[in-house]
Image 1: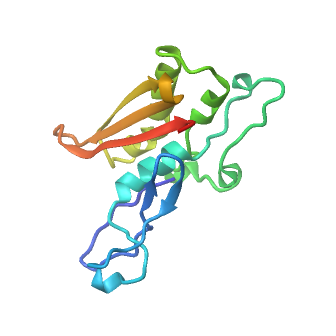
Image 2: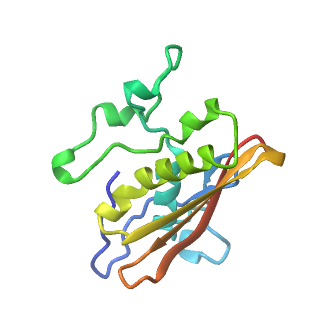
Length: 170
């Protein structure tokens, strides 16, 4: 994934916004007030959508992270369409590896935070954000893991906050 800065006065063709309901992602429809885009897809939250794509897409795991019976995941395009010379990197997170672990209050949330930071690093490398803060919290009563993400700019101003996603059974 690569974020390309928007320049110029003409309204660019933007990728549609994704929304996350806690279980699955979907394309966001344009609202009634969006006269020029009536019946189309909303495209106002590019950075939030990039965060969701980074977190909710499965990244390929390293062979040593897999058990003998595991099938490696990952976005198929990463196997043939990553132009590293242009600054592109594989897409997604390794959060899917946590599905095979028992939820606890310490180890799983720390692993989730690391996986999320690793998945969001391209946003920092490309200059879309200066820093990312990730906080994962286990909710054992509901068998889910809540992950809150905040992106800040160089002056410390919040540019995306907080996006909260959860994993596990609802």
